Length: 253
Ligand SMILES: [Zn+2]
Image (tube, rainbow, N blue to C red; front, side, top):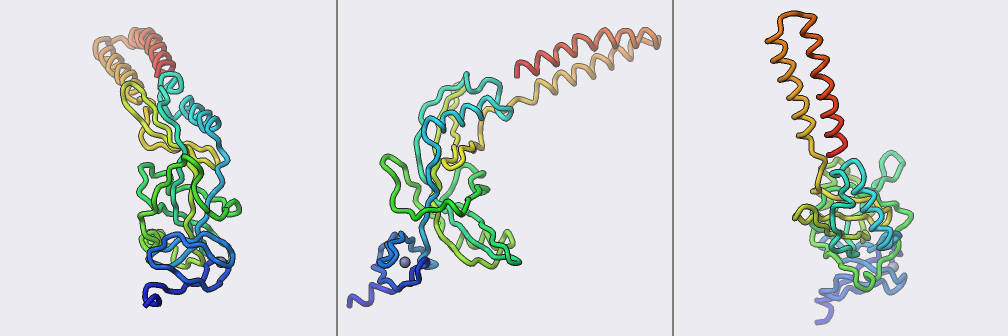
């Protein structure tokens, strides 16, 4: 009766035949000691990218991003970091050989609040066999089946896949407050790049208002003053405070 619940599979790494115990999601190959993942589509390898960015470096990367051009001015000083926690996020990794060259593609293996994660670059040379997440590291369960991710890959026009595996990507999750709102950012734990989909952005409206004010003022002056020489004189006089206002806005926002 034991035979009916157990089945055999060949290790995707060394090819050796193993016995699969029903219900086991992360078996270890008895021959090459590789940690594997059981998915409805079969048994695939389980890898991880090493965590090269420590907490201090993650905090620094976040600060650099906050003081950069994408976010509102002085976000690094005006926001308060609440938590900075390590987590590991699962991604399906596919190798595809197209016209002789091998390309690596990734698709998320769990729902991600931050779309940039799907564009993550995985340096294939750095992959290590995954055993288990470190102490205090939050693990996100792989809830998106391999077949679903393969479907997304086909939609991107990639049909020939030579190898599929699950890769655990190290991340740091930061929660910070800015003007009574809480925001989240992810820092990639291999390269230190910051990923965030919602953050206090540089406001565009003040620039727009200055431009609009200029149009309105020049328009009114143009209508009121008939004399061409007087018109240019008034335009020149109006342009000075407008330029100063524009400069002030650039500094402030
Ligand atoms: Zn093996």
